[in-house]
Every structure is written in C-alpha cells, then in structure tokens.
Length: 231
Image (cartoon, rainbow, N blue to C red):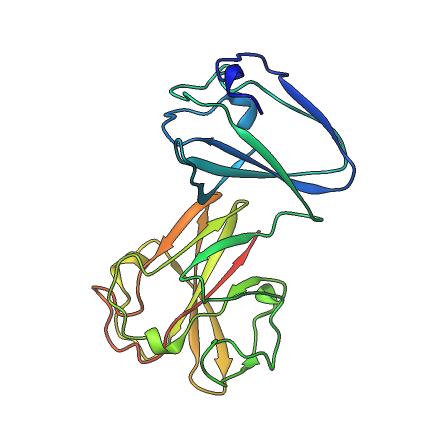
C-alpha cells in the first residue's frame, strides 16, 4: 500500500479479486488505540510485523474466493494509526482454530483419537476419549514442564469463539488458581499413564494465556495437563 493514504477514511479503499479461498492478513499500526469498523471480523493473531519504521500488529480473517474490499486506514472507528496498513493473503480452506502457540515447540493436532500420543515428549497414549472431544483441536504439551509454576505458561490465539478443555491430573487435590473459571465436566481422559479429569471454559476469540501445571493453588498434580478446544 501507499503510506500517503494513511489518513484515508473510506469504507471501500482497497479492493482486489481473491482467486482462491485464503486468509487475509492486515498488518496495522501498533500505536492505534482503536481499529476501523471494517476490521471487526479480523482476529488479533498476537504476532507483530517489525519494520524500520513502526511495529505493525497482524490481524487475520478467512475469505472465500471473490472480490474483496477493505476500508481506509482511518475509516470510522480508527483511532491513533499514523502509518498505513499492509495487506497480505495466504491460500487455505479456513483459518485454523488455534494458531501462534507459545512455547512454539508445542504442536497443534487435529482430531486426536484413541491410540494417539498426547504429549510431545512421552510415549503415553489415549485409551479412552469422551465423544465430545473426538473432533477437537489439541495442543500437545510437554510433560517435562509438569512442575511449571508460572501464571502465564502457555499462550495461543483462538481464531473463533470456542470452549477450551483442560485435561488435568486426577490425583490433584487442588487446582491452580488460573483454573478457577473452569467447570468440571465429569468426564475423564483415560491414558496409558494416569486418568486426566476434563475441565471446560468458554472463551471468545483472541489471545488466550493459561498458567503452569503447578502454578499457585495447585497441589498433587504429577503429570502435565493437556489442552483441547472445540467451537
């Protein structure tokens, strides 16, 4: 784009034809305190495009093939953007439910089933999976981090509203404080190691941060938790 147009207030500033289904990324001035209304369907990825000028926060939205129209940098709703946005596209059939996991070493997996390995650093496998989690998206954590006491251990971007499930060591006698909003589903994830009780909480799309397995409040958890999500 051109930075000379950074003050454009139109709702139909930039248009183009998307030849195939894709995710559109808009890198928008990180100094902005409010986004333009036309970006209301975009999700903050939690990622930043660093430049020789200013850092740009990266937002994403899935579009089907066809004509796409984006508004101006300072269209209604925008406050504080002093440099124009940059638009990018990447082909795909959808925007995955979970993206941008930190620690980055933790892989995201789709549709784990009985027999699947659920930790990235152990050979333990699932022996019994509740039916409601059969199509869930999972983050395979590492059991080496089972003693982590941080309140901000695992973060990721939830692209759409979803329920987050935490499968937590059934031997625990107390949960970490960061799980205070989670509800015990009464379901259990059975494994070749130990049974994990399943807790659930609804989250809106956006950046999610979960604490460590042994963060303040936790007692008796001797294996790390596993995270699953479902729209």
